[in-house]
Length: 381
Image (cartoon, rainbow, N blue to C red; front, side, top):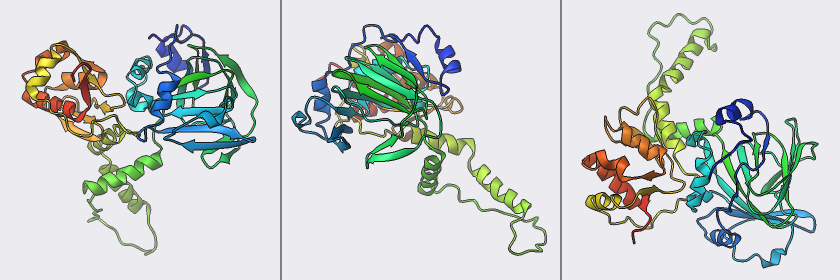
């Protein structure tokens, strides 16, 4: 699968459009094929571990409900949509789609969402707070996009936040292989013209509020940030109720010194590798031994589980530190090459691992990860 952004290079796209303005990308994917069938999607939505919802209109009123779902017949043949989040956690083919957008780092990735809709189906006019590439699969869908502005939002349903009517700056019909890129804040409304599927690759970052809240939990859980303010050079106070500029500076400096690079990277590495949705992990640890991994990888590659997040920082790479699924892992100095392979590649081949097969620390950790389901062999029973 190859991406063509209207002849633009990724650098040009980032400079001219990323978080700046919407873009219709005609035939961004040539001969695009759905990543799964509607029946397969409906099967996913039957699973309680999969986050799904359906949106429909009943007597003119918007309705929304969350899965798992057992049947769809009662919804009829128009005006409804089925949505499954985190498709990349469950369908390996979604990785091929994600790779096309890897000019944006994976720490910015939210997930791949798939929607199936019948004629008239949609989720209503709304505003998203994230970047999204809406990739049209089978069928046709009409999209209207408004400009940035003080758009009034309201609850069309307890689970649906809609926006008031807007004048479109884009009014387009997407065909299979077309893509609509939307930065945050642009109101948009998609209505299906015929039974269709679309695959949305979303990118977002957490708000400062969410990050600070999670950081506070991290400090408490790890008993960090316990150093108190010291002020042996304090001058005489003339106003007991006053926090003067010097004291404000001391308070600010205390916070700045607490939030050093080590703490921020450790916290954000753990935070950014947590999966927001369930992963397709085995219920029990598998029974692979280290020698099993060595033998099998000589025949076939190891594949990283879809949706598994693993990242590293440039500042701690040489120290052998990486982050995976909310945990910090230290592979030791000299392991930067294998960390880059683990985090940057979806598959590990014998060539990738040849210099590491006799490294006990690396191979023991890799074996533990295979037994946990983080990496797997495709053809092993």
